[in-house]
Amino acid sequence: MFRQLIDLVGRLGHPRILVVGDLIYDRYVFGDAERISPEAPIQVLRVAREESRLGGAGSVVTMLAALGARVSLFAVVGRDETGKTVLEELKAAGARAGGVLRAGDRPTSVKVRFVGRAQHRIPQQVLRVDWEEATPLGDDDERRLLARLEQAMPRADAVLFSDYNKGVLTPRLTEAVIRLARQRKVPVLVDPFKGTDYAKYRGATLLTPNRDETQTATGVRLEREADLAKASKTLMEGLDLDALVITLDKQGMYLAARSEESRMVPTRPREVYDNVGAGDMVIATVALVLAAGGTYEEAVRLANVAGGLEVMKFGVQTVTREEIVADLLGEARRSGDKVRSLENLLVDLGRHRAMDETVVFTNGCFDVLHVGHIEFIDFAGRQGDVLVVGLNSDRSVRSIKGPERPICPEDQRARVLSAIEAIDYIVLFDDDTPQRVIEAVRPDVLVKGEDWRDKGVVGREFVESHGGRVVLAPLVKGLSTTGIVDRIRGRRVGRTPSKGGSP
Picture 1 (spheres, one colour):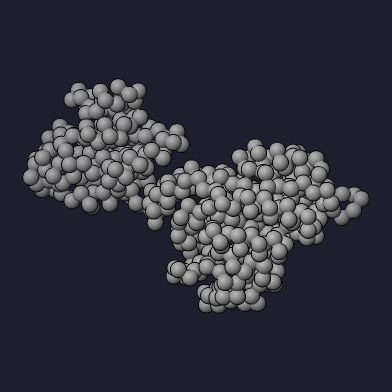
Picture 2: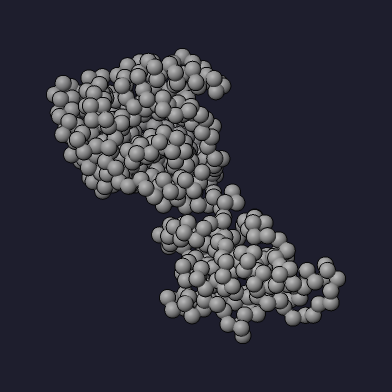
């Protein structure tokens, strides 16, 4: 699955997504909360720094932009300085803000969060203060916003509603946009507010309510998977949806879809720093995948990864495709999925190089693994960021070592090497030397044992010709696979290392 998700990220492209909803400006005041006020039983926050960022529909927009989508926002801000600042920050984030209205009868929604740290521990919110107007849009602003959406719809690959129940997504506007999108077969995704009446979302493609929102909207207590199925059926049939994704925090997500089998998609355990923003990241990723033509399952599985990365950060933060790929590559390696064809290896190495990571290559037969091999591999792994091991095939080993070798077949040798943490990738080769693999991989660092100093390192000239370097690793004296095999067979063995050195 990791491999498929990595490939999915590579084919997402840059779809056009229209985000419609409630724009909020988030401010954070950070400080130390180490004493109680003598004036009242409240904490005193000694301010250290302040931050501001786009929130609500604005956070979804910045997340989509960071994920590589071409995103346009349709929302409302006030004719105040904060509204002007919001428009500037949208532009800086790479979003199109031509659909944002400046209304004179309402302020820009602002939430100020005071975040305190006591005794240098993890910061926590101690107070939130809101400035906002949550009444429905007036008729004139509603018509103006809808007119701008009508102009943009022909170029849209998806529409996303980010509903915080602040008055922008009126029933009339919401229903009109869903109708326009359906006429053009553009998917409509909804991150709903917490409420009991979701009628205005009727005809949307997909909703992403969380556990609490689902329970409130359906009256079904979500305790078992059967409850999830029941609640999903209620919402999908009642609102004529194609799919529903219920987010369940650390349990993952539940996907129900007309065209696919319903299923639980568990999340991977993470060190959760802050849950704020996880829902926005989920719907942003789902919208990106569906807009690019992916399936619901692909969208949910990738959203699980992106949402997991977001909660490891404080506050509402963006996640990039590079971060997602790096996480998937790391998980694939940790899972033991390290053997690659040369073609697939080159694709993966291209992703590592895009993140400026140093590629190290070494090779060997690695038949009957011993401590000399482990020391050698650990040394090679310390020479860069990504270690690729070229493994001689059985045919290659027989050619080099003789007809009685290898002792262990290539699939077993590869499996044992996959268990070594320092190794990132393994590629088998059939030639007597790794020259052709080295030329294909183009490593930044080539590592061989120091016993090759006088024999000549295969690939040295090529690696050094494109600016790479060759490093000779110290060997554990007196250890070789040939020596071990000879002792097992009861033969007399000399002290000369076997052909090919330690590996």
